Structures are given as C-alpha cells and as structure tokens.
Length: 511
Length: 127
Image 1 (spheres, chains in turn yellow, purple):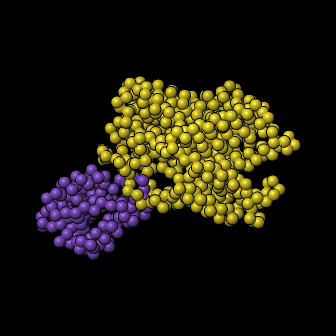
Image 2: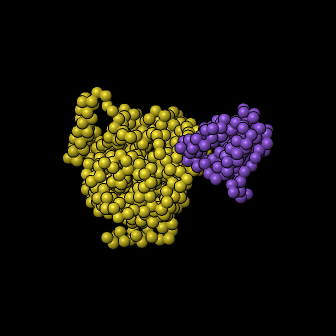
Image 3: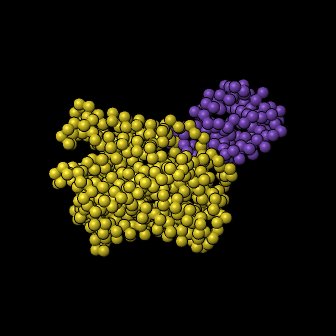
C-alpha cells in the first residue's frame, strides 16, 4: 500500500501528470482514427523515450494504451467502423443505438463502463502482479522457455481466424529475430556488417505498424466517405444506469482473466461478454437493434483485458498484445528488463506505472465525456496530411535509433512487408511478438542447456514446464478436433457484420 | 442550355441550389447538380448522404435535370469538367467567408470554379 502511495507521488508530479494527460489525449485520438492504433503511436513515440525519463515515458504510454481502448469505441458507435479490433463487438449494438438517436447514451455507457472496468482491472493488476512475480521468480530457464513457447503458440493459434496465416507471421518474426551475430555465428547477415548487430526491433515495429498502414491507406485512399452520426454531450438516464452496471461488472470479469492469460487480447472476452449479455438481458428483443447492454459489457471487457495484459507484461515480461509488445520495447530501451525481477529492481517505476493507470483512467472519464463531439471531428482530417505526418515521424524514429541511413532502407523493406501482410490478411501481432520473444526464447534455451550440459531432457524437467506443455498439447488437440469436426471452418464473424459500413440505411445528418 | 450547380448539404449549397433552381425554372433550362468528394478524409460533411440527394432529386423531379454524386480526385475539377461536358451557360456555386489563414490551409473550391470556368459563374451567399 505504501508502495502504491509512493507511486501516486511519482505519477502526480506536474510533469508526469502532463505526460499522462498527453498520453490519454493522444491515445484517444489515435483510437478514434481507424487504422491508427495505440501500438503504432507508441512505436512512433519510441524516440521520445531517448529524451525523457523512463517513468514519464512509461506513464505516457500507459495513457495511450488505455486511451486507445476508449477511443476505438467512439468510432465504432458513431461510424460503425471499429478503430480497434477490440471494438468490433461494440459496433454491433453501439452503432444501432446511435442510429436510433441514442448515440449519447452509447458513448456514455462505453466511457463509464471503461472507467469502471479499467479501475477494477487495475486494482486486480496491483494485487496480482507481485504475487505472480513471486511465483515466477522461482522458475528456472526450462519453465520460462515453455511459457514463452506457450505465449507464442497461443497468440498465433488462438487469436485470428486463420492459423496458417498466423504461423506464417510468427515464423517471419522469428526469422527476423535471428538476424545478427549474438551467438558468435553470423546468421542471416548476408555479409552485411550493418546487420551484424541484428535488426533493431524499433525499426521493425515502426515499419510494420506505421509504414505498412500508411502504404495500405495510400492504396485505398479514394473511398466514399462514411456518414457520421452527430452527437451531443454523452449522458445516461436512470434506466440506462440500471441496465448498464451489471454488464460492466460481468464484462470486467470476462476481460481481466483473458487479458492476463498469455493468450491475451480483447477479441475473445468482448465476444463472450456480448453473447452473455444477449442471453441474460431482460430486453432480448432489443439485441440487434441497439441494446445498451451490448455496448456496456464488451466495452468493459475490452478495458479490463487491457489491464489484464499488463500482468504477464510486468510479472513475466511477456507481451500478449501489440501495444504491450511496443511498451516492452520502450522499457528495454531504458535497459529495464520486464520480468519477475522488475518489481525488486525497479519498484519506483512499476508502482508509478500502476498509479498512473488509475490517473489515466480517471482522466479518460473526465476528458472524454465532454470531448466526445470533438473526437468525432478528428475523422474529418484529410488523410494525406495525417499519413504524411505519420511517415515523417516513422522515418525520424527509425533513423534516430542508430543514426544509420541503412535503417531507413530496412524501414522501407519492412514497410512493404507490412503492406503485403495487410493485403494478404496475415496478422501483424505474431510477427512482432516473434521478433521480440524469439531472441529471448533462444536465450532461455541456451541457459537451460548450458546448465544441464546439453541434456535435452532438462526442458521437461520442471513441473511448471510439463504443465505448460500439457496445456499446449490440449490446445493443439482441441484445434485438431475442431478441424476434424468441421471440414469447412467458418470464420466466426459476428453477424450483421461491422465490416460493411456501406450498409447504412437510415442516417440522421444535420441535426 | 444547361445550368450546373455545385451542391453541398449545408446552407451554402442549399442557397446555391435554390438560385440555380429558380434560374432553371424561369428559363426552362436543364439543371445539373454536382456533389462530389475527394474521399480523402473518413468523413466529409460536404458529401451529401444518399437520403439528402434523394430529397434534391424529388425537388427537381418536374425539371429536366441530372445529378452527379461521386468520388473524384478533385472537387473543383469535377465541377469544371461537368460544366465543360454539358457546355453550361452558367455555373452556380455557394461561397463562404474564410479567414486568410483558412484560405491558406483549406483552399477554396468556389474560388477555383469562379476563376477557371469558361462560362459566367453566379456566386451565391446564404441569406
């Protein structure tokens, strides 16, 4: 408790508060804009970490993370275009509510639900992280190896609709992670001295997120504009409160555990929460036509899982979402290695981060309820200007890593790869996680084998490792079984597809 | 002869449409309504929703008219091109007040149409 209060002391200094506000505003802004997510923003801002202290940078990034989760719901509701994959479910009911003229209530239940879930999630995070770290710190290299393997496997196979594409991305990432001479051997360096130190992950992240997305948008620039639903000040009636508070809590209960598992991500819990609310609702007839429960639950699940993903990040050093992966990069650039020792080595930083999450959450509620109409205006920015800015910052960021013009070439090459991945529907997350975890996976493997003097059986010599392998086998078995039962796997897209924003029938404009 | 009007779903566009309609009715001329967007931003308030364009169509139903509602590289060019194609006698545009900075940042469709059209241009301000 004292530690947390000390954390608040750090988080509430004027400078850090300013960074938190900045992070929250930026995060919401990028969450609102489809295509630009918190992961890209944090990647673009990585160069900032060279000039400010670690606590300020991490506090800002936490604000961006939470803000992005919130901002995505605004676009989902007003535009039927989810800004974030985690807001896809929100769009189903949220947009219907907005079309019925209840945009203000939808935004309000999303904002307040996010606040409630974010706060509960952060409390759980504060309680859980030290406990998990205590357990994890006792594990040996073989267990770490197994857990990382599980994370890679789960992120690739559990999330996303196509396993094959997921594994393509994962192995691309692992291959990129191999480049360099860290093992004494030159691997994939093509006799290029500049590649001897390996490819900087910052360059890869910036290229895949920013350049890939910019090229993708440039290729699809001339689209019929979408029709945005005008909105006033968000507010809720008493009946809306009554219908919202239970879904908020249930959404939190779904979101946090899923976020905290190595196979994190908000897609599964938001979907589960939606299905549950539809079953439990006293107004089932409203579902599909704009039920407030269908917004409240998934939005809460979304934010709770954002808090949950920080548990493996802080306690084990395992990133399970793209944004968490980039935040991990930022920590590494300060020489801070997230993992079980983090709480002992850097207690000030961790508690400041945790405290700043509470601050960011409160800021989000205070700022976003009144600012919602303003956020909707962001969508009117001409995209050429926006993406020109993104390209500029991306190039600046990639260059400032090593001050090597060569990195700009790499940036372009990986940017083209990012474009190709988007074109062929290959998920980006497994690649980034692969690049980050690949070298660390190898490190754990070498440590384990060095300790056992080359005896491979050490890899399943620890109970935790065996348990993890069993979980992996079960997941794999389940996948195979499902594949056998359904020869033609149907992508489980939520019906009424938010992917079809063109199908706007009744829209009120110019109110 | 033909009258071309640059339409937007706001007071400026409505004023322009009103004048163009009056002019067309008085002389029994063909009226072409142009509403276009460059599609560069996700939301363009000046691109009329289908419902709005349907209203415009209904209003002009008894008149010889055509509606161009499309995504184009440049809105001013689109208006000019339609005017040239239709060999318009008159182009009607709505004009708004812009600060010097606003002019610098946003440019003006109306200004380009006024300067570059081959025929007379009627610049209309809302009442």
